[in-house]
Image (cartoon, rainbow, N blue to C red; front, side):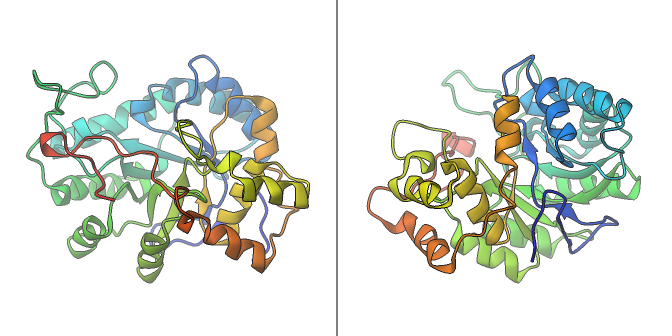
Length: 319
């Protein structure tokens, strides 16, 4: 497939033109810089924004969208916006009000995609003032809410025209199967950490078998810098020199060529633009294979994001 910044991936469900393969992430974006980043992205060809209530910046994203729409940089039909339901709002009666707050902040009538942020129901609290409810021992207070009940409440949002497609975020294979076995509207994506040092080969193969797309957050593999990172890996740097591209561009192109949707985050306008300059690049089959095998090298492959959201303070992922 020839790729460009407007390339859309067909989805297994939902009345859409397909999901753009490249977008702007907004996690860990510094306050008061998000609006400018969104406006810059939408003025430079981006048509896909990834947001979440718990990032506590959807009001800034909404301002950026409003400015771009008013300036004629993009129209709503072309724009794709994903948001996420935070874990303290998984009770069925809380799902729609949570989305309504997101829509108000984004200044939109609907979102193109809505995802439960983690498969970890938490005690009901305000997302914006107390997103991590903890007990006296500092352990997350969980809620007795079935993921399938939460999903059925999300399906109603599609029926009401408030959401176009549903997906998952940070769901493992077993949790994905649970949703698939108990849904009327199937998930179309699973958004997970995915970069050259943590390529998610097994999960990607499973999702592909179910016609579910993998969306890579933290696709540059640089969330934690207390160990190896994709951006400083010798192979990635060597390939950057070979192709006259930055290490970030090599990471992004690798995922795009393997059919993974990417949502790199930046609030620096020059980097927002630079990250998108990956469509004049084609990694060779040999170089793709070298990156694919990178995580198998001793000490290199590792997951960087694994919070203690499970009951008893257990980590979300066992690997």
